[in-house]
Image (cartoon, rainbow, N blue to C red; front, side):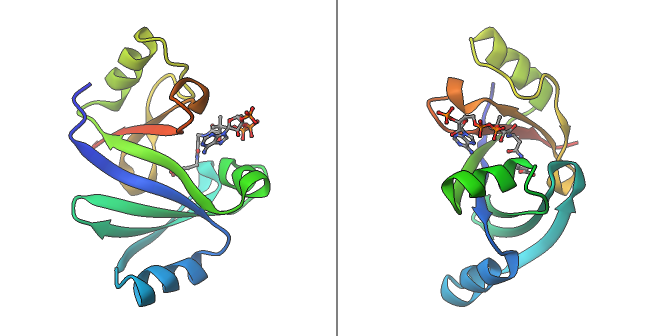
Amino acid sequence: MNISHIEHIGIAVDNLEDSIKYYEDVLGLKCYAVEKVVDQKVKTAFFLVGTTKIELLESTSPEGAIGKFIAKKGQGIHHIAFAVDDATKALELAETRGVTLIDKVSRKGAEGLSIGFLHPKSTQGVLTELCSKG
Ligand code: CMX
């Protein structure tokens, strides 16, 4: 599916403001964007590390994926996202290779990327996102 790099690592956090402080003041990274993704019920903050981003995710609803994850496991690494040429085609390919899809076709995610998720039960326990530009 032509993965070029790790696009981002998604990290579930209790409080975006507190976490941004840690990444900026302790690790010396710079938060370059904060964005609400309404349909995912999250507020996000982004940091660039080389060509890979760190995406901090604060839940805006206990019913959302991050709200449920934090309630069950607490804050921590939530997903890994790979950059591909075409997220919808990559999803289709993953399905033909036996993977259970969360998203049958790609949809709009943070930063205007086309994104789709593979179910962690069929990806060796790691929630996996495929994303492409446009
Ligand atoms: N990583 C690994 N496993 C996970 C997981 C994660 N992030 N989240 C849930 N699971 C596991 C659970 O532990 C559970 O396993 P067990 O049955 O062994 O207990 C199983 O998956 C089902 O979990 P659940 O809590 O019963 O189901 P949910 O209703 O929480 O759904 C999932 C889980 C992955 C299908 C859902 O979170 C989802 O659709 N995620 C995709 C969308 C998303 O994550 N959006 C937030 C980020 C948005 C963004 O990046 O902008």
